[in-house]
Image 1: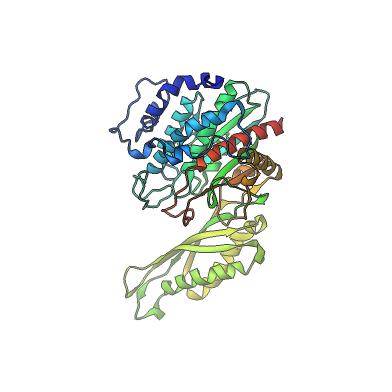
Image 2: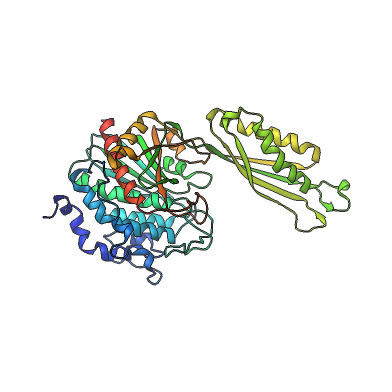
Length: 467
């Protein structure tokens, strides 16, 4: 007998869902074609659907995860069964996004895909003002609270070397941080919560935020906030992939879970000259060497050791000829720090140390210090919600303690306005794991239904606790 919830939205799409899962992901689909009501869905390119967008029958990734993991609590109204039906499509969506990545600020087609998927689920997504992000409210009881769930959607400027059918088709762009997984998880959450809303079983409103530009400055979270993404929100939650945790484990921590992260660029100038006569000019190569070796050490000596301040230059350049002292040199890097107080002092400390180190060289110094993001500091009550949700979604053994990372995350800006928490989603693969921000990074896709179950449970518990 057909479960009663399948007659809500699923009847509209169930007959064509499996056949259309790849067709929905037309390459370069335009925003005018994302709404299901539009009868003239077209593409400005030939169909470009590869084997990456479909899963073979009996695929381990599509079938190996049980509807409800051992020790967990089932989702209400047989949503576990609906999730099991949706897993192949969510994996296909993740693979399409992975093979068609877009850089920070340029996520227009990814946003169009998200809007289409949410519209097919009967929801009413709206685009951010620039068109490269999506906000979608799932309306339950009108007198209930508003809970937000956030996923970031941008990729990194890296070339994808992986030998997989869903390898990036865009030169020099790659999803090396798991944002494709975050997006697929949140789409699955939207599909399931939409069913509950139709049944009158959602105790408030859940706002899905698909955020652009997490990887750059200025941060995309600030665009979302400016566009009203946090209006009426009482709590916000997010997941981030963690290759150091296996599938089925969720990393939780009260307080700071990431570091603050700023960008530092130092430009040096001088008259230039002949390498035979460095005494007649300013030797910028020597000055640059002092900058990148001495400044990081001296900066760390100006603050308490337990603040965890770390200045690392990832770029340094000077000159074009072996016998010419250049007139310009540049170094750029990141400053990361674990506590908020030291983060507030960091710009002044860096400026003073750079001035002290460069003064004897005679180089003219231009320092650009770009504020990035404060540490993500998880609210204790929000972690309580996530902890209960993890136990319900995965069983008590799914809860894992996690250390504070030196990585930065612009989810922190949301927490400047409303309480919330970021959890780490285990995506570790068999064999050696590859760290985030490496082009060869990949995930165990069984983490996708895990993330969906967790965030559905989180939304339901957060709504109940906020009533």
